[in-house]
Length: 261
Ligand SMILES: C[S@@+](CC[C@H](N)C(=O)[O-])C[C@H]1O[C@@H](n2cnc3c(N)ncnc32)[C@H](O)[C@@H]1O
Image (cartoon, rainbow, N blue to C red; front, side):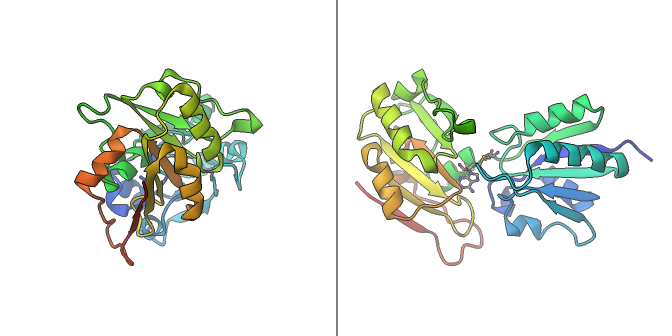
């Protein structure tokens, strides 16, 4: 039998049209697909019925299978199967713990291959009509996790928070909006900085709210924004006025777009 391989595959943020050709080939030829909670039904439907599917339900702060067990599962599958796909939301190496899984596989002598995916950062921004960099508005982008790991304080102290020419993209920040806003204001960001919070970006359920930094928590709560949600802070958010939002494929009903001062 050929050597087993675990493919760490990025599935993108939800729209099946954002799966890479390589990702699609792999999920259609795998023995087993091990997948997370953020993998959309539209993508799961593309896995042939003969391929075994194992749900490991990983979502921020709510791991239905602990990471150590996921790692061990991948190694044990590799002992008896040839093509194992570890399907992860977005890109496996952007806040996806793909690096940890790859490291574990390497330590256990299991061959692996990483297949990058479209991260929610770029995809949600694009569908909302927001270029993450734009001449004159932003010359850099900072991806940051907005959750508190193991009850540690939020670690957002960075020059990027203060730099008005740096777009901040905050993953997993919904539960900590107050603290994120306070940190950004404290670092010197203007309270009028435009922000967008995008829920279920690129899927038919996509919704987003745009407002100013100072009113973010109130507006997110008033609009009932739910996870998964991505936060974009920076002057580039105002470009959505010019570029307009993009309706995700097969959107039914149409995406609702709200804008607040
Ligand atoms: C564990 S991180 C995984 C990120 C992923 N590896 C990526 O590259 O997009 C999960 C967070 O990504 C963001 N996210 C993922 N998919 C999203 C989507 N469709 N819409 C909005 N945010 C999303 C949310 O902030 C969510 O809490």
